[in-house]
Image (tube, rainbow, N blue to C red; front, side, top):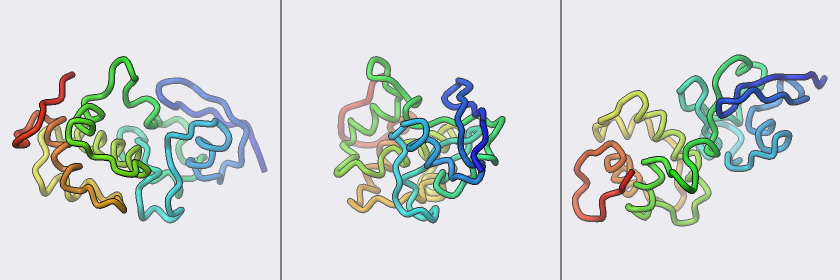
Amino acid sequence: MDISITLIINGKAVEAVADPAMPLLWLLRDVLNMTGTKFGCGVAACGACTVKVDGQAMRSCVVPTSSVVGKRIQTIEALGTPAKPHVLQLAWIAEQVPQCGYCQSGMLMAASALLDKTPKPTDADIDAAMTNICRCGTYQRIRLAIKRAAGLPVGLGKKATT
């Protein structure tokens, strides 16, 4: 049964009419037309649908909309802007992370949650936090981009600017 639901998405109160059991992913994509968050597997395995809820990375394909009422939801649309990209987006470009790009919004949101919690992550921290799947296999570049965004040494390459 559809009801009126108010969520806090990217810092704004957003009202939608939906079934409270609807996964957050489908509310974002189909009801609110926020298509930056991607569908990958539907079982929380791949991470393409990752958003931040109260600062924590969550797989939105399995999160019922009713469970996030009153919580702060951040999607890829609010990570940065074309005029002022987020430091992670700059690092992603500097390290040439994306190939097909499909998983990247989820990767960036998971990386953002990691850096919020652990500003100077170790390789072990990155491995523990970055459980998203990249079918193109750009994991080493993802690690370098996260380190670059954190201001850690990454070796050769151009330094991302903020």
